[in-house]
Length: 355
Ligand code: ADE
Ligand code: ZN
Image (cartoon, rainbow, N blue to C red):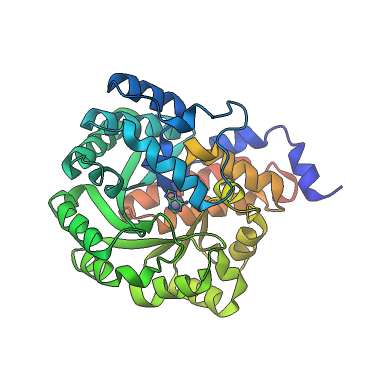
């Protein structure tokens, strides 16, 4: 019997993962728009339900086969987000779900250009999200911050203008990221925008999606030209030992998303993630667009636990990595790390071989 089969039979695996204190560092707020919330917002705003929902299969969900086909559903669905109230409800809906899964800290991407490009003012978006984060912190005790993503399939001028719009809201935004369609949109296209963002005090991250044309080249660009603090996805570094060494030595964290990988490529890349973990790279497990890929923090951890040979101690290490590479104050980091240590000490010694 393989170790995979053995773990699949462990009845306490799901509750053990559910009870672990966790952090999410790669989740798009617009990717938290569930079909149920889309319908509610469409009704509230008196607009028609987006066409993607009429062909939605309730049991198997949306049908995507790559990033491009996913984004072709993702952006039109956002038409239901119109008022500050809508953005607040979207963020609160996700934060409530994350809190129920014992997620202690989240860093949430948002795409202002997906809204400003259709006439929704930047302040409407950020004010709605900001109030939701404050409410969730106060009522649920969940720690959260925002990362503003630049749409890489739009122009660098539009990206710079969006960065300028964000400056009055600096208090609410911890970092700047890069997302959307990677094809023909290398990170270097936005070097000046990232340079300005860094000067303004923002931390930096960028998507290097899985198995893209020029993945390795794009990863080199984000490290050397953009000088990112983290990389979103980035798992393709496994193809190049020198890149693995650079990422490890610089302490650059990777925010990996197993279930998302399995939807937009033909593999969830679990083996690669475990390989990088064992080579000392700070890999983490995240949900990306949970309403679309049908997996939140727990389900992504479960996928790793059941479909790879990762041990329980290593599953804890994946969460330790997340708190370590998160953009929080050191006192808050230490607090979460001590919760995790306590959980590991309390639950793992009872297991045979820590597996
Ligand atoms: N926007 C939302 N999810 C994304 C992903 N996985 N890659 C690029 N852009 C995105
Ligand atoms: Zn993403």
